[in-house]
Amino acid sequence: MNTHQKIPQSRILIDSNAYFRLAQSIHPLLSQEFGSKRYCLYIIDGFEYEYFRSSRLKTSFSWVQQEEYTKNRAQKINRSKKEKNETAFNLEYLNETAKELELTTSPVDSEALALAMTLSIPVVTDDSDMLKLASEYEIRTMKTLELMKLMLDEGHIDNQKIDVITSYWDYSKDFPKDFVKDFSSIFGREAKKIIFK
Image 1: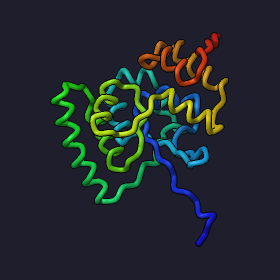
Image 2 (image 1 turned 180 degrees about the vertical axis):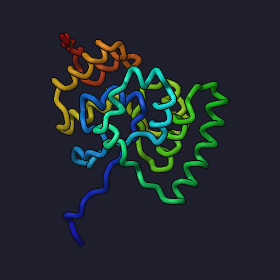
Image 3 (image 1 turned 45 degrees about the vertical axis):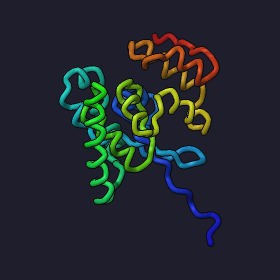
């Protein structure tokens, strides 16, 4: 028996908003293994559809169309036929529950949760309705700040990088919900504000 056998990759799905908040500052963000458990981030399947049908997103995040980012998003999670069928099955339940709870999760978000449910992997999202729907089915989730803490703990980024990222969120007025409370709770300190010139 090979005791030095490589451990399997720990895949993590990230939703569109988490991608927008991190991909410029931590590049390449996706398909890059880090940490002791070979963590690796993948964008949700419907990202391109969601992005290109929204003139607001294309205007606000025009950098997404640059070749280096397009190439980085090209790698997707491979799924077997069985996993695809199970994801479709899970999606039906999720959509029904979202309707019952009057949640406004988009089809793309629901599909991401269905895939995470199938593969037993976490989803990174700051969307309140996604978090509620995930909790109904015990789908693992992380907020963007929790992902950043994982990256910090695993030596993938440092505190200075965290301060640069959160300062940019402040500059662009794009804070996740409950940012101040969550930051203090997760990092045990207050966020430092860097002034961009």
